[in-house]
Image 1 (cartoon, rainbow, N blue to C red):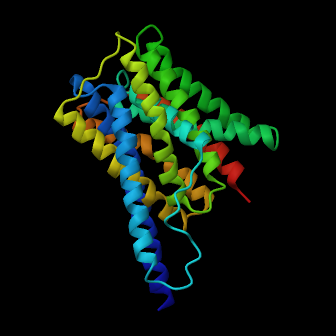
Image 2 (image 1 turned 45 degrees about the vertical axis):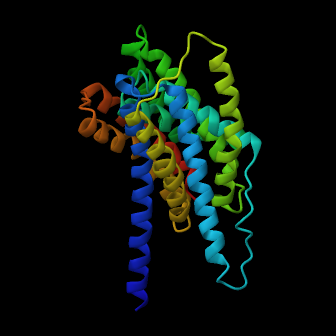
Image 3 (image 1 turned 30 degrees about the vertical axis):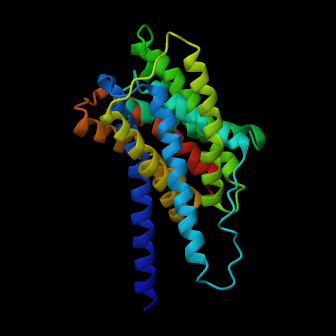
Length: 302
C-alpha cells in the first residue's frame, strides 16, 4: 500500500512539473504567435499579460481562501496579498524585455537565451557569494559562454542582436525575481501580489507611449486572445502549478527540469510557427545547456 501511494505521489509530481514546463515554453510560442504579422504590439502584449496574470492569481487566491474556510487549524492568511515592489519591478522588466525581444527572435532561440541567462545569472551570483570556480565549474562556464557566442555570432550585424540583448536583460531580471522568491513563505500570495504591484509600472509605460509619437498601440482580437491566454493560463496558472510541483522536487530536479524548456519551445515553434531548428541552434543548445548542467550538478550536489 505504501509503495503504490509513493508511486501515485511521484506521478502527480511528474504531471504538475511537466504541465508547468510546458506552460513556460508555451509562453514563448504564444508571444511569437501574437507578435508576428502585427497581431499586437509588444507593449500591449506585456500589459495585457501582466493584467491577465494578476486577475487569474487573484481568483486562485480567492478560491484558496474560500476553500480554507472549511478547514480548521489553518495557519495561513490566504486573503492577504503580499509580494514586494522590487520583485514586481523585476517581473515587469522581465515581461517587457521578453515581449519586445520576441519581435525579432524565433521561439526556440528566445527561450534558449532567456533560460540560459537565468541559469548563468544565478550561477554567477552563487559563485561570487560563496566559493571560487573549480575545474568542473570552469569547464561548464566555458561551454556555456562558447555556446552563447556561437548562437549570436552569425547575427551580430542584423536586428536580432537587439532581441538577444533584450532577452538577456529579461533573463537577468527573472533570475533576480527567482532569487527573491526563495525567501517567500506563501508563494501564491506573493506571486499574486507581485503581479498586481507590477500594474503601476504598466501605467507608467502607457503614459510614456502616449508621449512618444514613434510608438503606437496595435491590437487585433487574435492578439488580444493570445495575450490573455499567456497571462492568465501559461503565466498565472502555470506559475501556480510550478509551485505545487516544487513541494516534491529536490533543488537539483527543479533546476535541471527547467533546462528542457528551450527544447520544448523550439518544438512548439516548429509545429505552430513552422520555424526550422537548424544544426547551429542544436549545437549551441548542447553547448549552453551542457555547460549549465555541469555547473548545476556541482553547485547543487550535497
